[in-house]
Image 1: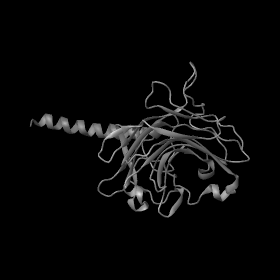
Image 2: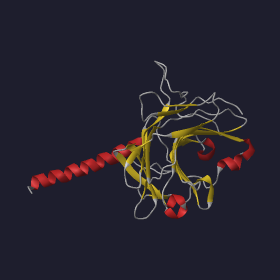
Image 3: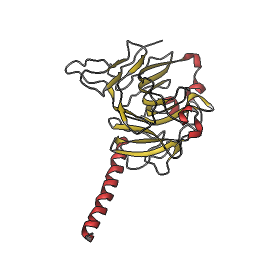
Image 4: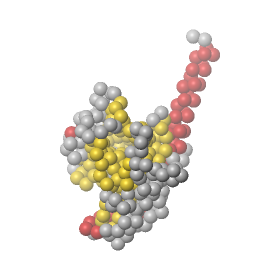
Length: 290
């Protein structure tokens, strides 16, 4: 092969790799990891509040029963200046019929992190972890550009992919600016799960909030009330897009059947705008009381 051609191919491959890494990092507006993002070693909500005083609500979609070994979806990152005792998040979760789950997305939680910055989160529920908010067990990839607890910049697009490693059986988590620019963030070891160690059966995606009963419910998504028909001239609600699950044979399948859960109907909504096959809108302004 001509030496100039060979050199050109090497340069092209190197540039493609660098561009991919840079675009993945741009999902949170960073060129490198931010320091000081260690997750707290305790559950702030149980530390600061009586469990009977904590209220929750979801604006979320659930896929029907499918066996899959991968799931992918995209969301936009938003920020809300909320108070301690309020939490809002957008997420994608994969689950098994044994009530195990892996969840990742963005969250604003002043009680947990001490501020109202938007942060990346990843957690699981499985063997030895009954409350769906376990953090220990996730194995971050060394030198990954993003880790749970890292700040995210509002307005950026974030794509998440969960993929079962054929060799180890672990669930690998990827994140990036789009499906074409994903980087491995870390993995959830197979040993954390029973049924999820083999495959997932359901997925959930959308938004959720948590708040104490002396405060109003916080905004969810981008704070715009979600509905099927968006009035002309009105801003679009937050949405999940590009949602697919990956069958055990490797085939990508779009979401064509689902159910949903919705709480505080005066404050949050759901919708699937006509003509937008892969757009699922969710969320609302909040402001509800118990």
